[in-house]
Length: 130
Image 1 (cartoon, one colour):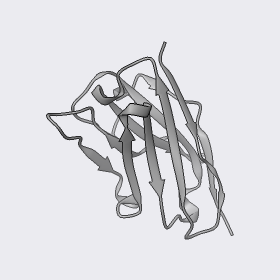
Image 2: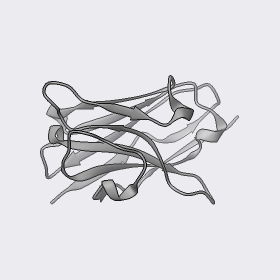
Image 3: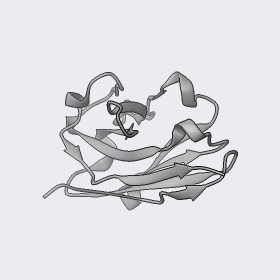
Image 4: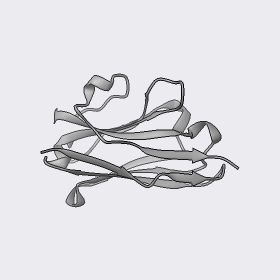
């Protein structure tokens, strides 16, 4: 059974940092694409960052323009875990952050469609406020 559990959210001041963790089980992590999405109150869920399943010896990554240079996605396959390191946080980063896993092995990742991902966690709240 596939399980996806996010953690690491919290309250942080503007300019601060947080690291979100996505713990997974029930599949071979390195073969699947992982996406981080977020949803602010009254807004649609949007893709933030993703990392592909292994392709050769490497992984592909993608970021929404608003977080490029501030957020970094990484994976630790031995621990079945994916991380989202968030630096220089802004008030507009406030949202519930969700981790999602592709339903099948995938050597690419995308942020444009929620339907690219078959398994979702329950979300973790990130609040950026002074």
